[in-house]
Length: 115
Length: 112
Image (tube, rainbow over all chains, first blue to last red; front, top):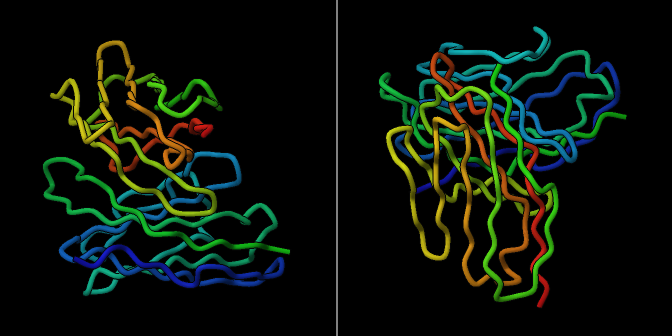
């Protein structure tokens, strides 16, 4: 069984730039969620994708956007980077049945530093 | 809005000791509660998932309990080992939402 994989593991950008983070979901999972974890904090929900559609969004501005592909992999795009975007970005996959939320399995994360 | 609190923020114990980590949440209308482990700079590893209809779950030396009506969960770790040193996070899924609400975690250090 293949787990959740994320790339890149680390990256450094400058303020105003754009970044794309990638996630491959665990085999058999149809839903991907993205979380932002600032240093010393718990993860904060950005959004979730189910069957290639956004299926819920947290309190993040529109410059945070995403995609889910037919193979259930996903991208997180952040435009006009700000210093406060520096964080660990976590991708989680799950199998949603429409009845209740399944157990989430997380990747190792992408560490973004904005200078 | 759901708020999750974990106490204590940090805990140091000698090897072999049994310990309890606490988690509380403000909205008792949850679907499930998960406990995670996070090593420094790493992703989250799921430890235990408790559905809202369940009272506890066990895996090896770990036991998690859930009291939904009082908005509390505990994670009990038996016979702690230095390898248990990590940050432990609890998270809940609330009815009507499809995301996890996390606490800020308890950083555990087990001293050999």
